[in-house]
Length: 201
Ligand code: IMP
Image (cartoon, rainbow, N blue to C red; front, side):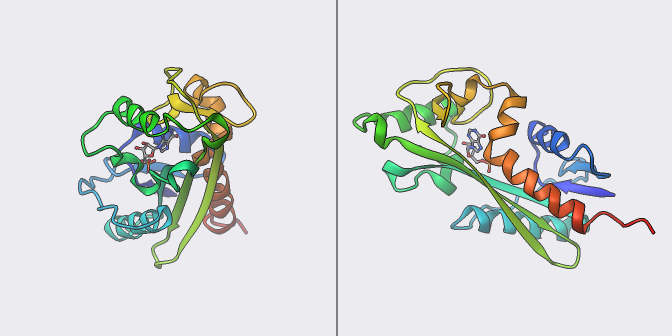
């Protein structure tokens, strides 16, 4: 059985492969199935964007499709950058520039008020047009400086709740266990297992 993972990112594909390793799916990326066009992420929420992508790509491919959308919500900024995490501080900026921009915005915010969370929504769309979503969060605080070289995005400035380490100091296996995407994917695995695996006998 084939499962299209709506991404061009092979790192993300590997994360899902690890979490779904015991399911009988062959995971394919958009590149693997020859889809080049990106769906515009015009939704106002992570859930809307995940649904938009899953719907568009199931139609384009005819394959069971999983799409995800994630973002960082900072309480002192009323949930920003949220759904705009990828484009925060302007198009074409680097992760380091986005992190510097966020640290500058929070310059006068004390430690106790720097609470934040990564949130991920996964949408699974089948060829009949049914869509189901799961959600995962990873709670923490925004640090005062960057630390660590693993991961990507806002990982260097995110201190994980219950730890003194920044997320960029976690190995990828450690991150998968506690991350928003890992948690949403574990819930998605249950949907795949219960509803989309052909029952023998
Ligand atoms: P995406 O929807 O997974 O592509 O995530 C959108 C944006 O949210 C990324 O470009 C990052 O800026 C941020 N983001 C999502 N997940 C993570 C993460 O695990 N670590 C750090 N930043 C993340």
